[in-house]
Image 1 (cartoon, rainbow, N blue to C red):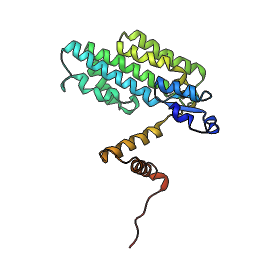
Image 2: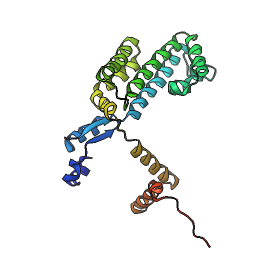
Image 3: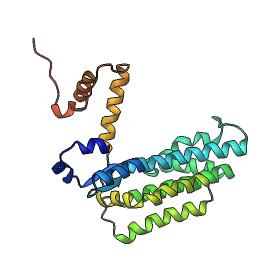
Length: 229
């Protein structure tokens, strides 16, 4: 990344005010060296992705420790695995009640999962403050609520999630203040991978560049009409 930045015009680099990245310390260090005047913003998608991975890890570990085996389709925690990863607002009241009651009645496994799920939702509520005009008290209270719940949960995976959130708080706060993210570049990267996979890889770099450019600029170029015979 630094090598690429060194080849770009200085005037162009000076115009960059914000850089939205995933939670990579390597990228963050490169941005701070190559663009010292720019504000680093943590992309919220990757923050939530960490929380969802944490939930899956808690589910697998508790099932293995308590049941002594991998999860099965008949296990309540296995049945609830997809709803645990969905946003609370995307669940109907009946869906939420079914998930909550089933896990609550399952004992240690369910209660541990619900504790981890609450930590995930606290983190999402923190990120949801972006572009809402929240005052400094709200912005300061939200991470305190998440970090306190994580520390009191006594769940290793939840505490491991809290550590990078605490370290990356300045960048997460920058997202709350600005609302900037890199969803568009992530979407373009996904399309490029799909094109390469459909072509079973490329041996010609120029051909790959042209094909990916054609796909990713289709909306900007508008609908291509076929010739009328």
